Length: 227
Image (tube, rainbow, N blue to C red):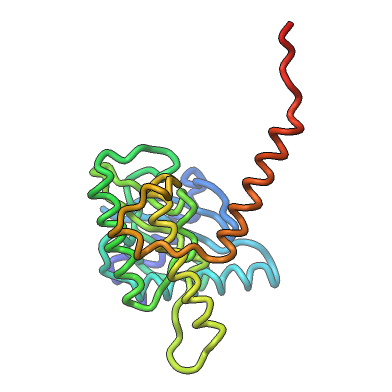
């Protein structure tokens, strides 16, 4: 169901304004604009044939997840999915964690943890929070989680593969929170936060591979001449 405050014709007009193009994502084009007094971000499926069909399916899936999360603090409001290809979201002011520093880290990570728990309570696991680009820092140092394109919704009933993926992503969200809060200094994790940190096998393997690769690079790196 689309938000009555946003008209389809206004969405199409925004999409047609090439000057508002921000970048091209893996699903399609990302645009920003204003509809009335509302600042919006529009994700539009791109491609042709089977590629277009897959991108539209993925955006519709993301739309359904945003609908399920509606009203949770730290999640952009979703205005709807128009013409089967345009996902319209609230444009949140702020920069990604990769682009800025956090003024009040204690408040920020307390609120981020509360948001993660809230989306989990609604059966959704984000699954990609280790990417700093998926976490916005607002001007008042509040967290906002974005990009639910690979998120997992836990289906009711007997769906073992879905439940396995959801459980994996569920723990991955908490591990990501710990990673960001402690800047990878896992030895500094407080006793209270240890309950959220349970490294997954694939994460342990990735760390081992990274360490080995770092050592190899240091070994083969040519030494600087002292001359």
